[in-house]
Length: 165
Image (cartoon, rainbow, N blue to C red; front, side, top):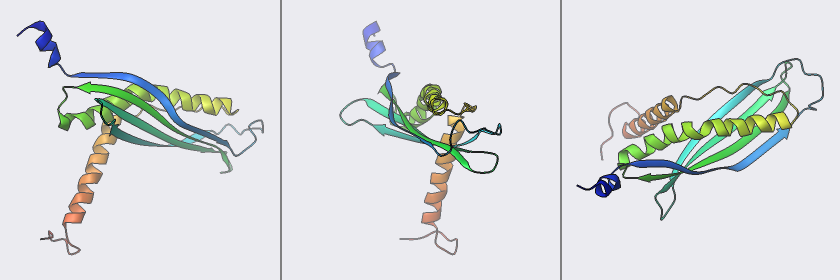
C-alpha cells in the first residue's frame, strides 16, 4: 500500500469555519445603577448537530441562553446566542459521527462562544460573570439516556407491560 492510499483511508476531523449565527442582548435594568455585587448568570446550554446537504460538512450549534438577576430578584439582563462550528469529516464511521461532533466538536468551539457571550455582557455595561467549562461528554450521555427513556416509555403500555403490535 502506498503512502497516498494509506492517507486516503485515515479519518479526518477539522474545523473549517466558526461564526455567530444569532446574538441577542437585552438590558432589563440600567447598567450604571449601583449593583449590589450579585451577578449570578443562570445559563442554559443546548446543542445541535446537523449535516450540510451535498457536502462532507457538519454543523455543530451551541445555543446559549442566560439571564442574571440582582440581589432583589429583579432581572438585570438576558443574553441569547447561537454559535456554529462547521467541521469537515471524512472516513469516520456513521455511528461515531454524532458523538464525535457533539462532544469534541462542541468542546473545540465552546471557549469562543463563551467569549462572545461574556463580551456582550461586558459591552452591555455589566460585570462579566464566570462561565464555567462544560462537560460535553456528560451532556451527550444525558441526552442519549433521555432519548432511550423516551423510546422505552413509548414502547411500554400504560400498565408497564411492553406494547405489542
